[in-house]
Length: 76
Image (cartoon, rainbow, N blue to C red; front, side, top):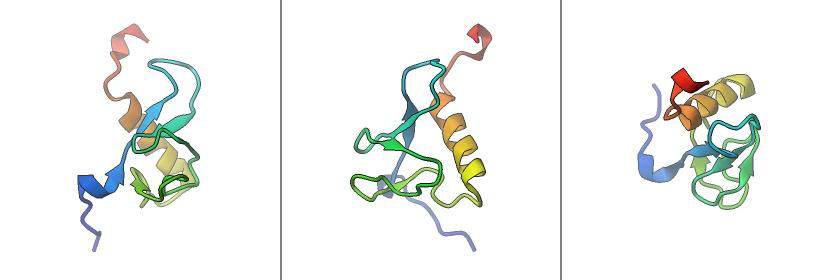
């Protein structure tokens, strides 16, 4: 059974700049760069969105989708 996640214990990610081409992600808790291989914030240790992904590749896809969800896709 999957553990229930509470939004207050999990940080999210954001890209370097809106609609940029750089894929570097940063945590919302500390603004620290995070790699796909990391499940926790390197600075504070808070779980970051995608921490429970099956692979680094899936974690990266989950984070990219979350971080860019608000982008207007018609202008890409």
